[in-house]
Amino acid sequence: MTGVRQVDVLVVGAGPAGLATAARLAAAGAGRVEIVDRETQAGGAPRHGAHGGYGTLLHPLTGPAYARLLVTAARQAGATLRTGVTALDWAGPLALHTLGAEGPGTITARAVVLATGARERPRAARLVPGTRPAGVYTTGELQQAVHLYGQRIGTRAVVVGAQDVSYAAADTVRAAGATVVAMLTDLPGPQTAPARAAGSRLRHGTPLLTGATVAELLGRGRLSGVRVRHRDGRTAVLSCDTVVFTGDFVPDHELARRGGLALDPGTRGPAVDGALRTSRPGVFAVGSLLHAVESAATAVREGAHAAGAVLDHLAATDHLAATDHLAATDRFAATRHLAGTDHRAGTGRPVGAERSGAVPLVVDPPLRWIAPNRVTPADRLPYVLRTATRLTRPVLRVTQNGRVLHRERLWTAALPNRTLRLPACWTHRVDPEGGPVHVSVLP
Image (spheres, rainbow, N blue to C red):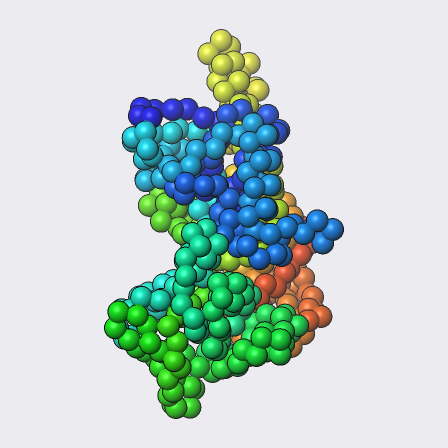
């Protein structure tokens, strides 16, 4: 389909966050809500995560079942879903050039929601030297090969990483009939639940090499082994025909970057406030694009939360259109009607909305990043954080200009690559005219 098309809300990405956003918007009567995704099937990463862990405790689901549930909910709510369509670039502040099987096109909208997700960095981006043999995967590539296409992957695998996604990759290797020779991490220990790490070690007999990295890939044609370097400089060769690089996610932020949206240096995704508004009025961002990566359940909650902000934005633009109509017929009456409306931002929203009063929210080492990473006094969405080092029952402190806004002790250890959560019960104390808000760990 070529030409220019108009929708009310365009959602880019049909993973859990995008589908949840679209479902709520369509159900709330937001007008024409359309989702585009470059993949031929909607559902995102859960489509090829055949393991459990999705749904709820009372209604557990596998990844494919969870994806089907979200797709069905979006369609039944009235959202239009178009797969095999790639958003190429921006055609305007709220318009995108697209390309699909029916040809190029342009979609304009009253609001755009970016839900483009994240990806694991492949071997080349990790600068792992050696030959270029077959048998080298990321977790996503492995799960698609095994669960979507039924391909054979080899017989002996090394899994690089020791976080939740790494153990999921190890389960996929075993489901394909292969043996996990070893898992390895450059950190001092596993970054998953103790029970899961113990189960892998005791039930499956899989050794975990800590303080170790892959120094070289060996083999021509097919992988024959990996050279491992330990922290003390020792090296050893593990014989294997498959290696899976896990974790090390980066946001798929190309569209946000090309649109000139402000990016957060910590997450490397779009900078957003607690309503998940980006630096461009009318453009929102949700899911793993903001924080690579959190659970599908977190993405769904964020999608539903962002839908509320999108509805507010649509109502504000409707209000602006109504006041413009009044101005055309009675300028004096319209002037009185527009009292309290701020046109400096170009959004037609009442004063105090659309990023007005948002201040930067930053973390101090050893914390790595926080999302959302802009804060207003009205924000209520809980924050997710990551740490670079293990912290034993840390105390998190939130300050602005030396003034303590919140202080909280976490009752569990904080591990790298594991989510920390910070409630938003303190945001009403933020001074919108003050400096950045800092989140730190007390010594």
